[in-house]
Image (cartoon, rainbow, N blue to C red):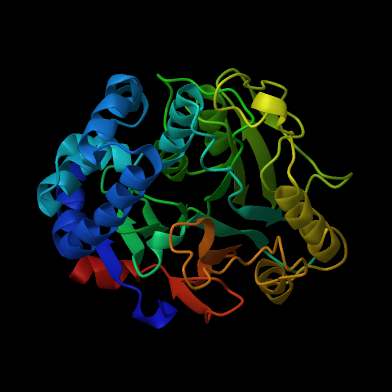
Amino acid sequence: MRTQDMPVVDLAGSPRQRGRIYGESQRDRIAGILACWYGDIAATHKVAPESYIADFMAQTAFGPTIEKHTPDVMEEVRGMAEGAGVAEQAMLAFNCMDEEWWYGRERLARAGGGRGDDGEHCSALGIAGQPGLPTYVAQTMDIAGWSEGYQVLLRLHDEATGLRSLIFSVAGMLMLNGMNDAGVAVCCNTLLQLERRKDGLPVQFVTRGILAQRSFDDAVAFTRAVPHASGQNYTIGTAGRVVSLECSANKAAAYVPGEDANRVWHTNHPFANDDITRGAGSPLDEGGVMASANTLARYDCLTRRIGQGRVTPETIKAALASRDDAQHPVSRRVEPGQSNVIGYTAGAMVYVLESPPHMELAAGPPCSTDWMSFRFADRAAAAAE
């Protein structure tokens, strides 16, 4: 995917209408990426994908929690399923990506088939408080290698709140990360070591809930208040403020790497949250470690590159594109024959929280993909349409 070739989809109207627009406009690409996901399920779990999805949904209870905290987003999922011609259950399951990761690990562990996905996804950071510079929130979005070619940028207008959002995703998913025009941005990274709950709010619904907020305090309050389905670190920023929140089923804890609360960075091991999950599927099961060589290497790279000194968008882009450790780089490519690898950098983004805010995006590994700037549509022009 070249960044300039990535589809940009405008979503407006009621929640159901927004979902239908998304599903209809990306119908072929949603069918393509679901076929990749189904193939991965069949290869990993040795079961028909339809049966696996049915079991996943039957053994979890995300629906009531989604309806309570983000009902409009559930309506979008229903509309997307209608527009794409996909069963609603499959569409919802696909939008529970992090939850399916830990569910799949538990299933494999109980069956004696190993652990599956290692959870080493994404490197995130937030920088605020630098004289003369805006706040930055940024990350590499590392997911399955078969996501390549399915990246999409969503420009969403929520008519109920009046907020507009720029959302990076892949076809068929609500969002991977994003920013709204009130200047609230969120990036996130997996923490499989933390406790999960089968009736919590899935990650993509948490992030969409964050983008429905107009202020830093409201975004943080929402993130702390909801019951979390998955262990996840949320890097949230607005003008002049950033926070790294390690969230689990029973706790949300802020992490500050050093003495400066205006500078945070994170990979895939917890520091501040001690709500650890153990047993089948846990990274600590069968002699596993809290922090692998992979997550430690990427964390150390971010520490060296953005842990001190003046940090500009160029500094951040260089950090996100870095391959300082050849075995455990921040920017992660898919090599020939590795399409099913988890941990491919499907995109890298820098949310620049100035007035007005904008994003810098590379739709693929930034070590080999060009960056482009994306901005919100002019309000007057949008109203005229």
